[in-house]
Length: 408
Image (tube, rainbow, N blue to C red):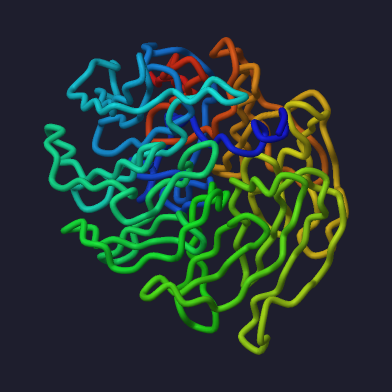
């Protein structure tokens, strides 16, 4: 395995920004935000500028950041110990930490944690790289319950567990084993689990969709994209998705009863229809116009915006027509990185630590502002809160910046 894995596995870094919010803008409670798709709705972004507020270091890793009620949560590794950090979102000062033994495991990359803390109903959930599973009291860091996946004969894939915990009703859903596992979020009791293998290559975070009127979850495992019933783990359908290494950490993009799938090397991207009349996902179109190796593309008003390429292969920002798959425009100056969308604007963090804000304009690339905010490798998705943007690099430098000028 080579640099390709690095372009595919790591899912991290968060952001926050000064936004004017009507309902959802205050919190970013889990990986890829409140909508789990990299978008923030009900907000208006204006008076755009970029200015650093504070900077700290949380240790090596690619854990993203959750931000709730003025607190920032993330994970980093020092001296083969992972530490869960709770920081003050306004000044970066530590409120509490919790550490546990965990190997750095720097196989072909810097190593450290790959998962993002998940905040739900006044509890914080963390999955460690080796299978450590915690439920914390987010106020003081006290452990409410804990477990270890090895106790259930569920073992990590080669590069460690990388899926972030997903909450559905009273269930905590994990992409582990051959088809996932589910715990009770309140007690930590195992509800069900799938079979285990030597290397199941389960790296993607589960994504909730609606299949024939029912909530279900899709995620990549090895050579397949699976759709399962979260209540018992039964499979609704699967789509073969074989690539050279079968390492697929990205999530599909779900919109308008459709599923856009792009993950892994030079394989084609595909749009599927999930219309109720279909017995299984129906192919709408397929081409090679978008290759999402790190994170999913983001849908906005009939178009998909995404990073096409990888760190080891020329990458560019693209806009494609969601109905046809045709390329509307591309920009070669962005390179590899990740992006979010808010108020019809793309929030882009390049792998060189440059923050770029551009219009989500299907007719042309229209850049608003750019500024370097971090050094070293940034393979992590940005994320947003009402006031700030938070971003980190592989060695744990965590920066908080405003992206809106403070009004007098």
